[in-house]
Image (cartoon, rainbow, N blue to C red; front, side, top):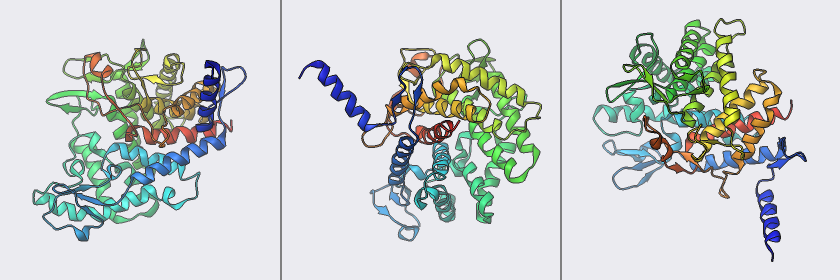
Length: 416
């Protein structure tokens, strides 16, 4: 068999595995098949379902308990599935599953977030008693609630409360609302900040953690203070982190040193663009800050488009082409750009960028329906090598929700 035959066979096998990867005859305007996008979304969402269970694991001996009734009061357990942790990554997974649930009629997908929140509500009393006696529980971030990234599933609880008005959900909402307005550290201009080993920083990740909760509280209550806080925080984060020249976001701003860390981390930019999308999606057209936010969003997208790699993905450090192609930020950008077009914030000329991003994401899906190339959880640094050398993982929850959201927006984009 000659080399040309091998190449041809390899191309055919790739096309069979992911038939959604299609290009037009001009090779410059990628297109996608809606049915094939749906198949991909179904495969990824089903994989999430298989990785989510509602069991507990004994920290000491690894024994699995299928219900609280099997756990002795003094036994310390953890959740058997990471997908039920009180962590912000799972919040984004829920948002993605909620959107995909509009596409598929299967109850397990449609009720995914509901079951997760109900599981939390049903178990929190037991673990609260353990917490009070000093036993390590499965929900350490919820009980300690020290920083915005401890927000966990608070925004998803608001979503379910809006549907059901179940009063047992209210304590979760009240706890995080109190944290944002009365506990979380702020800088002199009221910007929400993180205190990391005594160092005060404005960190891009935190904008999203606050905004997803505030926006939903505004929709739930129609109280303007929530919207005002969401808008003010995003504008403040833009002020500190957005570089007017490069039109990209630094990862952090050091408050007392009055400077950024000058690192354009991919997912850090992803959190910021998601924050703007969340606010723009509900902000009234006559709001005095809308023009400012929309201008920043458009400028950011313009810069991102120029930095997109030939395979459709974006780099771990956006302006360092030699850094690895990172999947979570690529999913966030693809979703946000497609959403921008569908919402009328961006011209249709950006369609090629969005679809190219989606096709790039498909190349990161393994035969086991897992998504690879995801930067693990990341601290901050002035040293670019810190970001360049961050390890990657497969099927990290940082990517799954934004991937599902991106696919849903790509489907809507095909209708334009």
